[in-house]
Image 1: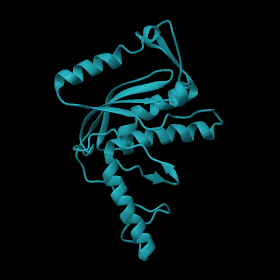
Image 2: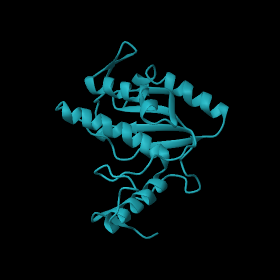
Image 3: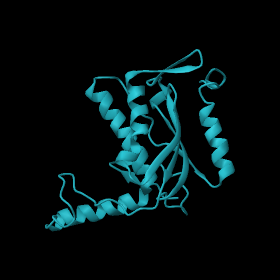
Length: 188
């Protein structure tokens, strides 16, 4: 396997299924904080007590469907150092690609701008919608923390599992719903 570099750093090959595009389907995701630091709050008496960043993350997950019309998050839990969610991504046409200064493909006249947009399309298609949705939630939370001068960092990447049937969905939903109750025996 050939190792590739990006910005002079070695890149770890993706753990995602190469046969799946991640543009529609049901997914169980787990996203952790850097070094598993407890940024989102603490569990007391079997109940999650959210920090300011934790409450912001809860609100972001609850409102994700307003930013991503092709996504729903019917089940999730925010824990002190991670969150679990089931994300449903519906097949949809991707939104218009825009440049960093807001120009659409039609408004982008010069060759460099068009090449940049074409490159962005290739990257976006490789990542799939799931990565965009999770990345958006992570980015918004990081921006909120920085704006409010709160120490915070995510672990790079996230874990996902494709949910293949109703039985799998039910087991994962139950795991998510019981996560706070099992914190004391599971915490690391």
